[in-house]
Image (cartoon, rainbow, N blue to C red; front, side):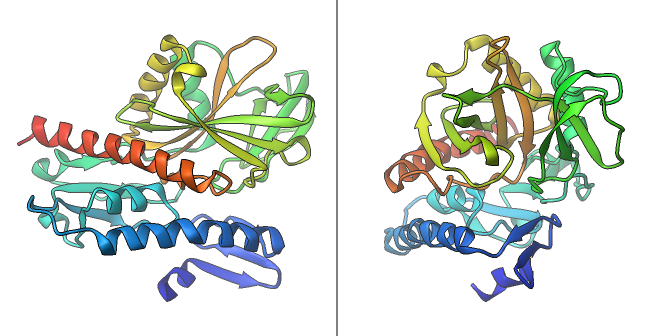
Amino acid sequence: MSSWLNDFEVKGRVIYVKSTGAKLPLNLEIMHEALVWLPFFVVEKLKRLSRLPSKKPRLNIAFTPVIPRPWYMLWVSTHRADMKFVSDINQADVIFYFEDQTSATPPKLSKALHKKSFNFGCTDISKSRVGDVFEKIFGYALTVDPESYSGPIAVKSEINGVHDGYEAQAPVARTEGKVYQRLIDNTVNSKWAEDLRCPVIGGEIELIFVKRRSLSHRFANTNANVTLHSPDDLLSNEERRKIKQFAAAMGLDWGGMDVLRNKEDGKIYIVDVNKTDMGPPIALSLKDKNTATEILTKQFIKLIHSKIKRNP
């Protein structure tokens, strides 16, 4: 566990995430989240330790340039699937590009290694890139020109994981490093902002986390409530088809998307893409964490075997 501490730097009452530059307040709220997450981590470790040896050979998985920590969904699913972590990509059956940076260049692979790689095509998850691809696939825009647009907008950093968004009234002057989006009306009962967190694996969505935050914290990363839902209840077949196209255009084999449904026009908007998806969400019940992990691990195994089958 001591190696985890190297991922962070504490200065005063602020925790700095070294990989992304994100700043987290060192307060009771974040300590509470850590304590809520800990039982799930302990249960997962105990399950792995108590698992009987399998007669089937274990698949070797390698991550580059970094190995996911236990708070990432890939770590959880890899352990649930009883895969073996290896450091040498040449010895791996599966290779995942895992990098928290918003924009980065993955290492080059040989043709043989590329056949068993995942997320190596997902090199840019900046908000502007997400907006451009979204408009191309869905045919309507999320991103706006802040200097010519008139009305409420969301102003966010281009950087992944910062959660520094805020509302503004356009027109406003453009600032370097910021992206400007329509302010989506995803409110519920004039009290909550509701996001649909969609884990997308191989272009498919098998579950959705419905996240609710108070309107005063709509851009924060702390949820007041999270519930588990079937995608059939929240997305149409056409919307799921376009999300699959969007994932392919982003080069995303595994990851999470934040999807908002606008009350004004009924349309969905993909506002964020994360190729290093954390989870399951901390505010989710322990029972639903387990259910979600089972579903996502089955998707994970299916994704891997489909590529292995295509590229024996």
